[in-house]
Image (cartoon, rainbow, N blue to C red; front, top):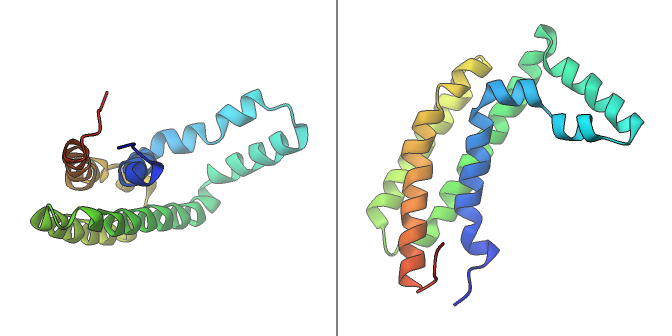
Length: 147
């Protein structure tokens, strides 16, 4: 049996969301790969202006609200994707669903990027780790070889 992108989506989404909790790196390194290596001067200028705006005190709240929305949406998607594991792990999926709802509420209640980063450990422990455990258990049952 082959491993598909659909199979890896829950764990991939966890890893992508985990990156969003590292708000210090997000704020400091926003689009640096594209800006620094960019050969399109118009795009480079737009990104530089956007990044400057991202790091100003006046605009930070606007970006914070969008950042919180993306994290909450991703956690919601992860919870939805976890349903595929519910037959084999009903208690774990139920716990994940509850922890996800609590974490979404915490994310929506924060008032700074620093407070988002403080939730990263909770996300790893209560969302990423259970998803990874169910993912690997599912792979073992499917007889798919892991590296």
